[in-house]
Image (cartoon, rainbow, N blue to C red; front, side, top):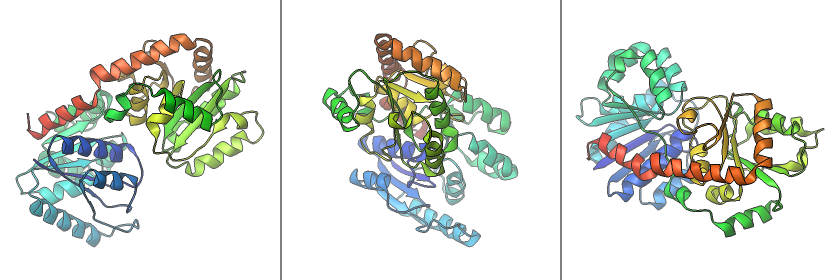
Length: 374
C-alpha cells in the first residue's frame, strides 16, 4: 500500500511530528511505501531519520514565513501532484492545518482520508472554522483518530456530526523504549551528570513550553528538604521558559540540583538513568514522553489531565496529582525518595501496562486495520 502522511512541521519534535515518524517507520517495516510531507521548517533530525529508513520526505514550503492564500493553493496543487505520481492509496494528516491541505488535495480522487487529532487545540481550530468542517471536511473524512478517549469524548460533544467516524488509537513508543534497562548506559549517564548512587534522579523530557508545568516541579522541590535529589530536564527547546527557570533559581539552593542539558538524541539512555519520571503538565492528551518513560519501566508522577489517567492507575503503576499543585507533587516525590524499593515495583507495573495494552506493534496493527489492510 502507498501511504502519504502530512504534518505541518517536522522541525519541532512535538507529539504530531513524533507520531508521524513512529507510524511511518512502523508501516515501512511492514512493507508499505511511505511519503511524508511537511511545510514548515527544513532539514531537521526527524527528516534525517525518516530518510535513513528509506522513506521519502517532501518539504512543500521551504521558508518558515507566513503562507499567503496563493501559496496555500500552490501547496494543495503540489500535494495533488504527489498523490497522483506516487499512486497514493491513503492520505493521513496529523492535526491542523495539515488536515485541510490533505482533504482539499485528495477531494474527488477516491482515496481513503484519515486525520489524527493530537491535542485539544484541534477543537479550537474546528470552532473557528465550524462551517467548513461541518459541510466539507468532516463529510469527506473516512476516519478521525483520537489519541485518547477523553479527546474523543470532547470531539463528539463539540462536533456531534462526526459520530460514527471516530476511533481511539493511543500513541505508543517505538520498540527501543520497550527494551530492558541498559545498566551500562544507566551508569554512564549518571557519571556524565555526576549523579551519586544514593541520589534520586528525577527527570522530565519534552519541548518545555509553559503548559508543561516545569515551574510547578521547581516549586515542589523547594518544599523538599533533602540533599539526595537531582533533577534532569531534557528538552528540545526551553525558549523563554529557561529564562524563567533561571530567574526562579537565582537565589535558591536548587541551582546545583537542576540540570538543563538541552536537546538529546539518546532518550532511551537518559530514561535508563532516571529513578523517577515527573510530568507536571497543565494541558495534555496522550503525551508520548510519558509513555516512553512508562515503557522503560520508570515510576511516574503525572497530572490528572486528558488521557493520562487512561494509562496511569493512581498508586498502582504511578501517581496522579492535580495540575499546578506543587504541594501534592512535593508529597509524592518525598514518598518516592523514602520508598525506593516500592517505586521500583511500580515502575515494573508501568512497563507491563505499556507492553500489554499500549505496545508499538498493537498501534501499527490498529492503523493497518483502519487503512483497510486487515
